[in-house]
Structure formats: C-alpha cells, structure tokens
Amino acid sequence: MSHFLTSPVGKKFIMSITGIFLMLFLIVHLTVNSLLMVGPDAFNSAAHFMTTNSFIMVLEPLLALGFIIHIIYSAYLTMQNQRLRPVHYKKVDRWGSSTWPSRNMFILGGLVLIFLVIHLSNFFWKVKFGDLDTVMVQGTQMHDLYGLVSALFINWWWYDLIYILGALFLALHLSHGFWAAFQSLGWDNDLWRVRLKRIAYVFAVIMGVGFSSIPVYFLITSG
Amino acid sequence: MKVKLKIWRQPNARSKGKFVDYDLDDISPEMSFLEMLDALNTRLIQQGDDPVAYEHDCREGICGSCGLFINGRPHGPEREVATCQLHMRSFRDGDTIVVEPWRAKAFPVIKDLVVDRSAFEKIMDAGGFVSVDTGSAPEANTTPVKKQNAERAFDAGVCIGCGACVAACKNSSASLFVAAKISQLALLPQGKAEAQRRALNMVARMEELGFGSCTSTEACEVECPKSISLDHIARMNREYLRASFSEEKD
Image 1: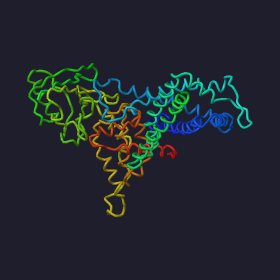
Image 2: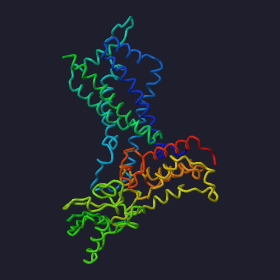
Image 3: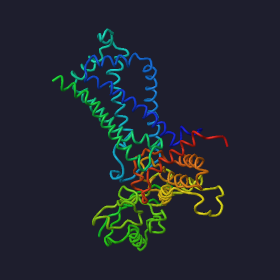
Image 4: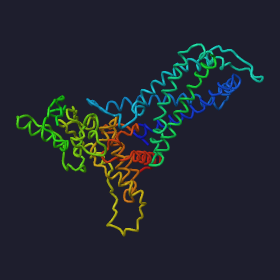
C-alpha cells in the first residue's frame, strides 16, 4: 500500500471513490430540489430536515472533503499528465477515437466548479450566515428557502441561464465520469462496459434535465 | 498520385527538430506507406541528402516497430492496421500528409521518426513473465482453462508493443500495453501464481518511467492496430487494487 496513493491506478481510485460519493450526493440533492416544483411547504420542510438532521450534519463536512479531494486530485493528475508530453503533436485528430467530454473532464469539472462557487454564494452562504425570512410549516418555524430560490430564479434571468449551463456542464462531466469511475475500480468487462455506459448516459440526462428544469419551471410559472 | 509530406526531421536526440516539406509526384495508390517513404528516401540518397530515419522490420503488421503518427492519428487513418499495412489508396491525390514520431516523455526521439521504446522492455522486466517452474507440458486435460479466458488471454496476447496506445493517449499512458501483459498472464494458470506481485510491479514501473494515468477516453483501444480491449485495463485495475489491499510482508 506504500505507493498506492501516488500510483496511476491508486490516483484514479481516489478520483473514482470521491466521484461516486459526489454522484450519490447529486441524487439526494436533485430529489430535494424537485420538491420546489411540488410547493413551498414541501420544499421548506425537506430543506429544514436537511439542515437540522444530525446524520446529514455529520455528512456535510464529509461532502466538502469529497469535493476538495476530487478537485485537488484532478488538478494534480492533470498537471502531472500534461508534463508527460513535452513536445506536442503538430496535428492531432481525436474525434474518431474518443468523445469530447472524456478528453476534457478537467475543463468541464472547472466549469462545474465555477458554477458551484456561484451556487454556494447564492444559497449555502445565505442559509448558513445570512438573515433569512422564516415561515411556519405545520407548527414548525423554519427558514423560507423556497422564497429565496424562487426570488432568485424569477427576478434574475441570467441566474436561470447560469443554472441551466451549470446543469449542462455537469451532465457532460457525468456522461463520462459515471462510467469511468467504475472502470477505474475495475468493474468492467465485455458485458458491463455497455451497460455502465448506458446507465451513465441515462444518469447524465436525468441530472442535466432535472437540475435545469427548476429554473425553467420558475421562468414558466412566473409568466 | 501526388502527395505533399510534412515530415519531422531531427538529426539526433539532443538537437531541435523541425518539419520539412517534401513533394512526391509518382506515387502509386497500391504502395504501402513505408514503400512511399522508401521512394522518398531513394530520391534523398540520390540527391546526397540524409534519408528519413524510420523504424520497420516485418512489414506484415506483427513486429510492432513501424509506428508513425500520420495526419494526427497513430498508424494513420485506417482501423486495425500498423503503419506498414497502410496503403497510399487511403489518401487522396494532392493530400498533405503530416508524419510525426510518437510524442511522449517516455519515448524520446532518437532520430527523425524513430523513438526509443525501450521503456516498454523495462516494464516487461518488472514482471511481464512467468518465473515459477511450470515443468514440462502437462497432459492437456489436467489443468482446465475456460474457453472464454483462453480467448481473452489471446486477445491481450496479440499486443505487438508498437506504442500506439501511448501515442494516442492524451496522458501518454501505457495502461493498455501494461494491462494487456498483466491480463494475458493473469487469465492463464501459469501466470496466476504471480498475478498480484506482477500487477504491483509493472504498474509501479510504468509510473517511474514517465507514463501517465488512464482517463478511460478509449482512444488507445480505437487506435490499437490489434484492437486490444479497454476491458483489460479494468482487469489490471482489479488485479492492482486486489493486490494493494491484500498485500502481505514478503
């Protein structure tokens, strides 16, 4: 195990494990977010649960750690890999041999990171440190997160655009990342490769369409 | 047919190279790519110029020495062929063809289009063999080998070590080559005894020699003249992870 974390397989193992953890988070995140389209009380109650439940509160720093390791390792891997071809080709034709997202995971990840910073400053920061309005739902006093989200998406159209683009970049990242994560773990053979790739595309489409449907919903319903 | 060649010329490992243009007028579409280069070299020698250095041996796609990066792809535009099996009929009259050596830190240029691929030999030295005494050939039915495994081992065993996987990979990774060797031996009874140690040692050696990690773009599989499957990389990862998590003191 001494060289595991610096070995080519070990580094991809770390990317894979953190990536799978972040994908599990995305499933939970999208499930809660979809309640925005059900109504204010449903979403506020779910958000209240997510911010007060002790199990979730333990998971929160772990999630942050997952993001940090995934980002740092990707930068480390990319920098290391780029040094391994000191003289570049004059002409490179990769369109017939690999997909654009598979070659540009770092760029797509970087775009998702930019989105993430905007997203955290829009919501997470305000929930943690801001002065939010409160509402009463079934006898419990809680933050009006629905009000915060709907105000942002209804009043600022460019935020809708940013969130739709963020979902698109995430979907492209996942279209390769989902399958590659399992390939790095060694879960791949002549049968499972096709299956995992299909699941990857379905997962990417669900995440992309799911997350972008929320700003679209508010744009449509606000008239 | 007429072609315009842009060929990387570099007198030796220390000097700086550059692209030189050559126009060829009398090229038959039936010529192989290497025969076309031979025609160019004949002309250069007659003119008293230094011929273009490139590697070749069997010219029938099994020795793995003739790897060239042609118009942005290892071994040129056709699938499942080495450079020697590429023919000029794959190009159009008047085409400009860019010919480059494999580009990777681990494959330094020796001269023109010839690169030093001895890094592959060093990886093989780290574990690409069976050192346990397997004795003389046993009776065929005493050691059953699943037919599918025999076929998978053969699929990995057809690797000719040309280096196209490294040339094609955006990370200059030798994962497909190393995986083919690990897989070929791990799938068969003779290689099983040392499978874990082999995986650890060969992957470590690959890293030391300056090859990158695998992003699973699948470019190596597509560009491999023998179409070696990326599934072997998954098997290498399995073998390596299993070995890492069950490693014991020697």
